[in-house]
Image 1 (cartoon, rainbow, N blue to C red):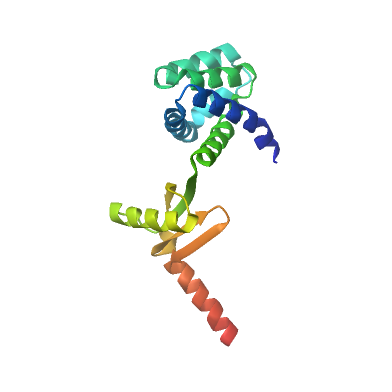
Image 2 (tube, one colour):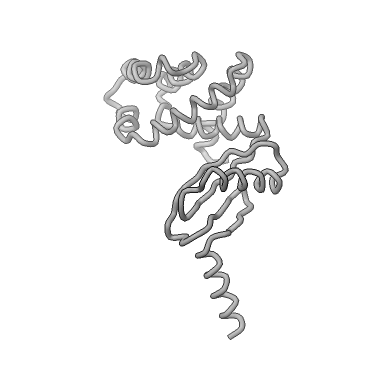
Length: 182
């Protein structure tokens, strides 16, 4: 287990345990996703939280001002604890680990989809059904990224399984087949 996971896992497990005991796990998971979006999109926030100049109390006050009213008490307590222990810089690792544990608990398959163009609702629905059938689960969570270099189609990654239905992948496979023939 990598060092960051060694640090993040106990916090993530504790958050999951508290959220489960309060019957707010699904709500916390939604809030974690939103918090991760803000954390990842704000270099200023990450820099401020990493600053050795700011005392833990100032960091807790800033986090409370930014997120306090929007988060459950269990998630607020996690932020305070990480700030107190000067571990707030690993917040993203803790939240990502929480989501992994949450998906394991709820038997949700994470499918990372890279598509050449945005997928329509119908395409997402069809992809959802196919991924559920392949994964053998009742629920799928998608992380969708757009990559025009695929030319067309998409690539789906579920753990170690990869399905490449992209035009660039087909061209690459055709090139490899032609190289073996020649």
